[in-house]
Image (cartoon, rainbow, N blue to C red):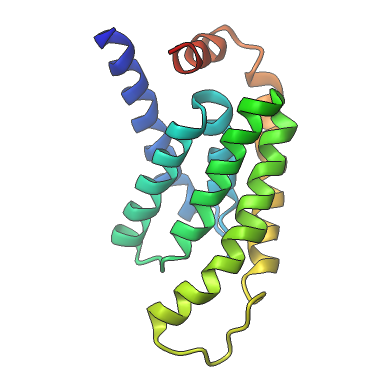
Length: 169
């Protein structure tokens, strides 16, 4: 049992490291498509709880190390949650993608408005849907990449072993 926990934490740490390193490398101003790629991959590979932990730790690290505003939290957490739940209860990558787009693109973008007003102390130039086009753009492009990535990866033996380690608790 301790061996399974070690394997899970190792995979989680690798996913966090990938997200922290790849997100700023493939970032378009206001969009983080690699974050969506890794949210969907984590949701399919590890399930909703570990996907949320990955998104939370990654967002905190990106805010501390890279100076990214709290948008990293709102953009990632809800997408990871809904992607994980979508895959767990829908059983298909398409449900994880739909959850990521809904969670990041809509919920995350709308919740970013009050958080950024609190963070900046001003509502000048901000309105409720100010982040929605960028969040949707990042989520849709990231989900397309994730779908292409997972299309072949889900058939590999190692992917199935890792997924079994997380889903058969």
